[in-house]
Image (tube, rainbow, N blue to C red; front, side, top):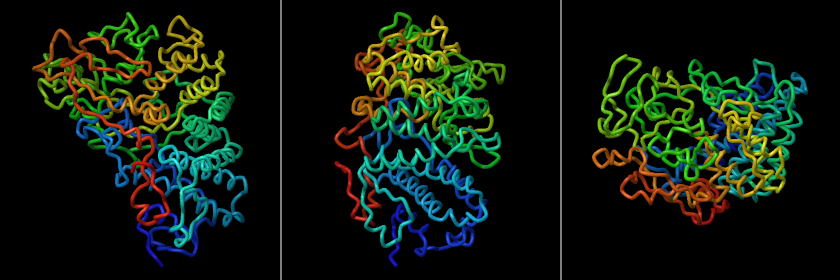
Length: 560
């Protein structure tokens, strides 16, 4: 029997009956497993892991930059078929698919000892998970192999790519089964399990990403019409939603539990990279200037159109989500005042009750944040105290459903009050007021399609900052070729900084797609990295070369 080097094919073959079954002593054999309810539940529970869930890396976008990496295969334009990110993405998706296929092929072994409704619910969870993996695959790779049952090793060498449209139909059919079979809610002890709302949310997102506007509209509306147990609502406090206090919020539709006591948490560099240097962090994973400039002024206008915006005081009179997501200059943050001004060589520490050296200005520390900004969203004092974090990973939340509904209706030419209300619910929550108090926040009233399209796109960017949705938005809106070819802009070096123009030398021009142009500022800004995006190929990822070496029947995407 041939041995496959392909992770995808190996994952499929290892779980197939009467094929390569190594049966490690520490793991159950597919020949004896799935024989009772406990084993079925264990198989499903194993896929509730972050290996198999997650939105895209925010560093693939114009919102986020990592000083140490300078860029990545997406933003440097260097992605190729040997890329480790590409291989890992493909591998994890197909690993989950292989496990789901094996479960579905063997679940009836437990029929004699497991109630039929329990088997149906577990089957629906598995089919939802499998559909979710295929949704991730087609939005990144286009056509992909559609494998729906365990595959013999010999058969795996002849697998070919299935047209995206066929895979998409399969995804929607699987999700429809899950929608019909899963409950709207569970008892509190199982609150994080996949529900009817989760299946609808995956369907709404997948439809939106593939331009199936009517499907996206209907799936989102079905969630919006939920009543009783399992109904969703916006969390009253935007900033608290992303902390421990928000883990049980009714806004969360899919979130993956993480807990340090269960050894599911993040520590080390990934945490320290987002912390101020004054707290022992590195200030390396940081917001871009473009991210800051994307937030509207409090009158609901972009900064280059609003008389309220002052580039010398950029946090004032802005959408409250700005200071909920990015640390405001001169405010206490994690026990220290955050002030990147080049002349602020000492700052007050509320933790120590004295002035200390300001490691967050590059006058003192050369590697302090190059853009001058730090992330605040989702970070709290425990990060600095423990140098670790274990907040649940948010995959889909109700705000996304509201904006999905609005965008789908706009694209369908069905603009009405429900569209405005959906957008305004999200905007009102940002200001901490009910949607009906239209004088207390910049309520959207226009019905002009072009204006509404721009508003929804800007709203998605600031509402979901740091949540991994921006990349697919840039891809599906065909804006990556513009946004990801602009340089990353930072503050000038301290010796070159014109203090009279700190922090910003002027109002940033934004085009009709809200893409910033910093060329007008010349040497008053510093290029800290140059992005590159090849529009002839990068809207799809390459099929991993490892897969194609094992199976030459897998064709490659253009340009790779």
